[in-house]
Image (cartoon, rainbow, N blue to C red; front, side):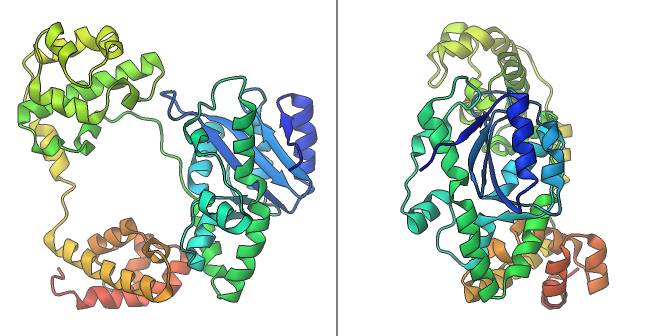
Length: 377
């Protein structure tokens, strides 16, 4: 395998961008530091063109000059599992995306039994990547040569893979469906980085706690976020959710009790111990207002019945086609439709839940299916 070109200076970036705009198809991937920092960032961008492999260091150069490339309607950008990369690049640089090809989506729509990149590379190109770099710290510099070779493989075979999949999608008459899915990925909106103090409700076990314990858990949840920001660490590396629930239940009152608590390390005790004990030693009001807010998200029994009916229809169709269920419609989309309960195609269209291809293909049968549910409202 020939060597890659490393891009970490303005002149090499300028030359590379000129090269990109001479291409019709370019493979792209990113690496981020989500396991090592509070504010996750893109730390590496890999490219493969017809002439070779390139690795760009976004920590060393101004990425803004790449905006026209990603927005271009003339250059196809090939990703594998594009959703995360697209959202990361939108979040960090505000890029807009057009003309994507996602090899994972293509594999799913084609009915491939395995669609992870590692499985595909091994099955199609007899290449095995080193999984130990999946949790590598891409924010450190310098990067290990073996890590860069690992990152490089993420794009090296994508152009050839795209050629294989393009022919298969055309042969199965599923290219239009795939292109509609690619457009949905490109249109995703990157959510703002806003901490939600009520996010503790999503922690497993939170709803089964007593009101007082729930108030304690929320206080721990907020404290953890503050500590993680100051330390620039992911919150789960300060203290994980399971231990927070256990602390909310046990509520140790002394430094010795906190230190002896299983799963609590010296790092947490030294950095956050005093504030943690203050939570346990301070009377906290019952979080009834949070409970009320949380209950607003409950779904009616009739909507649940409609959702299950639609899900069974979707699963049967997926099985008949030999694809994963989410290739047809995701659970989230089915739930939104079940809650909206449109009685006509026009009403469904106004909900703006389905893309154009999905609407053209499934709207009629979805409305008919909703009309058959016995628990309709």
